[in-house]
Each structure stands twice: as C-alpha cells, then as structure tokens.
Image (cartoon, helix red, strand yellow):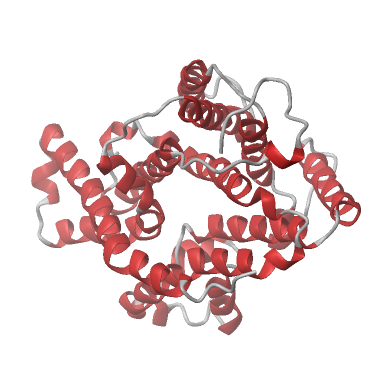
Length: 370
C-alpha cells in the first residue's frame, strides 16, 4: 500500500493501493511475544521456585498482550479493508482466520492435555464436557480454569476470535445495519470503563463483552486507517515517542504513580509505535535481519507453547536438584532464567517451522475463493 498526502485522498479508485508488506509490524509481533514470555517467566519462577525471574524487571511484560491486540486490529484492517461491504468475501475471510488460529491451537492444547493427564484426572470433579468444548472453541470462560486445566494464554485468543466476528459484520452487513450494533456495544464498554454500569463478577460472558480490551483492537484499526489514507512523513519521530511512552508506562507499572487504564498506559503507546513503524516503512526501505522476521513469523507458536516449555524446564531443574545450587549464585540463576526463556522461544520457532507453517500452507490451499 502506498503512502498518501496529509490531506485525505478523495479518489475512491486510488485510495486503496497495492499493500506493501510491513516487516516492522511483523517484528513487533515477535517483540510482543517476547514480552509475554518474560512476564510469564516471572510468574512461573514465583510459582515453582519462589524466586524472581531476572530480578522481576519484566513484570510489565504482560503488556505484550495489549501490543498484540493493537497489532491484530492494525493487520486485519490493513490487509482486509477492501473486503468491507462485500458479502461474497465473507467465506474467504472467515476460513483464512479459522486456519490461522484454530489448527495449531488445537494441536498445542491437545498436547498439553495429554501431557497433563494425571493432573486433569485429579480435577475431573471441577471440569465437565462443556468446559472442554468452550476451551476448544475459544469461547470465553473463567481464566482460572484456563490456567489450571487448559492453556492460560487462550483467554486472549477469545478476544481475537470475537474481533474477527465483528469484522465479519463489516464485510457482510451494510453500514446502516452494523453501525448501530457497534456503537451500542462501544457505549456499553465505555459505560463499564467509567463505572456507570458494572457486569456481575460471576458473569464471565458479560465481563468479556464489555471489557475495555476491545478498544485496543479499535486503536489498531484506526492506526491502519490513517496510514492507509494519509501520507505520514514523521514515522521515525512517532517511533521514538511511542518507545518513550511505553517506557513511562513500564515505570508506572512498577511504581503505580498513576492508576490509569491499560488502554492509556500501554494501548496508546502501542498504537503510536505501530503508526510510526508503518509510516516509516511506507516512505523508505528498511533492511531487517532475517532472525527478527522469523521471530515475528513464529510469534503465535511461541505465544502458545512458551508457558508449557518454561514450566516444565523449571520442574526438570527441581527434579535434578540443581536449583539450590543455582540460587546461591545470582549470576548463574540469571543465566538459568535466560536459558529458560531462550529454550521456550527456540521450541516455539521449531514448532512454527515444522508444524504451524506446513499445516497452514496445506490448509490454505483449501481456502474458498470469491
């Protein structure tokens, strides 16, 4: 997609040009995945070892989820904006999204369940068939159940799937039909955000539907709209501003200086970074190392498998009775934490290359064409 002047292009025929592949956006997907890996490293170390992971400096890494949501909104709109208002495109869009999310998720989830069969057996009274169906369909359910018995990160995929369904409305319906639906929904989110309405704590579905996290997808959509319709010549400056704001948000996370919503603290910096990266790459060619592109390509596999790898890595260390020795030396223990994270990333990249990529390649040949 080519860049545009700061005044909106009024020629509908030239508004959406050939889309340019944005490698920096792909790199950002890898960065977001790494942030989550580091945050979960701290969680797993506390649970298994009662120790901090790398001195707890990556506790803010959960913001990688916020970054992911903004990136997802950007990518979906950037790639599929021409499909809006064209119902015949719905089947192709839906199939592509299904192939992108579900097959590799089902593989990882099934593998995790088989590997944890003993612990699942001890929890049979807490789970029923409906819980399993919800887990496999990514239907919203209690995060405690997901973390304890399924894939902890799958709660975020429920938001991803819901965003795809909302985008399906844009493709299938005319604006006069989908506009009031989306506006009503966003009004509910806003009223929940400011505390005027509050869904019952025991209503997982209402909590999900009115969550402020949906706004982050919308921020990504806005970012894609602006870089698609306007020429933004100050991409590098926006990148620096976004990085600065993200750093401030990380500091605020630790010191709780301002009790602000994550939409403000991490959503807005993520959006600024995305706009800056896209604008910069639309105006100039940027050479990006292959390993960073690979990290972005493998981000979904890394995201799905890292918790399982890191959790079992630490448990093996406990069984081998090397943890006590490592904890006596902060440098060695830090090295152990780094190796743990690298192992999780390596397994994720391997899974991408030998499972995710071949599966998606095979299934995409079956994509129905409009």
